[in-house]
Image (cartoon, rainbow, N blue to C red; front, side):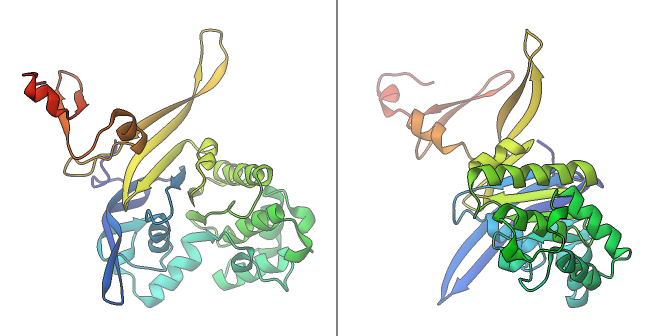
Length: 303
């Protein structure tokens, strides 16, 4: 795994030991517990996790809408902990684009798709607005929606227009919060493929946060968050079998933090009955991990 603390000028997103604590009615809730993450420029990455795992909190920090309690975070070379109010507004206008799950948060209902794009570019003071709006709508395959209002579009069209609006300010990083959460399976695939096309054509670093595990099938890298930390990663690549046919190869990795801690996947723990503590053994080229069994000690087996 890559050391996120080492110099990495090509890292679009770098988080190290992020902690976020919320306090309500005198009760503290630790949403992030030392999360570490690196996303290189141009990557398309899915962040998955159950409700309450901390993924939405992470996205709020990356978008500049929230700040961590501890740790460090930078996006496109900008240290988010040092931004003042005016710099934070500029960051949200020019460095990142954002796609929400709800259409009402992405598009103004009384404006057409072209007008929503024009407004976003006006706020960001982006030039050549008409041409760029047309190019983005064409790229997202919703040019036919240019003069339609959101109520005149399907759910998938609304989300693709929303992606175009998020790209209007020519962001370095595109952040999406459950972009397929309100769509059916077939439409979700269309939106995800559209985001993959944007990533490929424009090279914009894209981070999709979702609880839907099927999203990972459309990206090369999936990072799972559990209990406020990055737990595992799945990397996908195209392989060729002995017959010359291409197929997808997926490999799962546990993520080590700076002090060597890792989280084993829950299904591994359940299958092997691992809990409380495990046995470790350092081999020549790997570390062995076994369930702890008190019966072995009573039988004189020290392994």
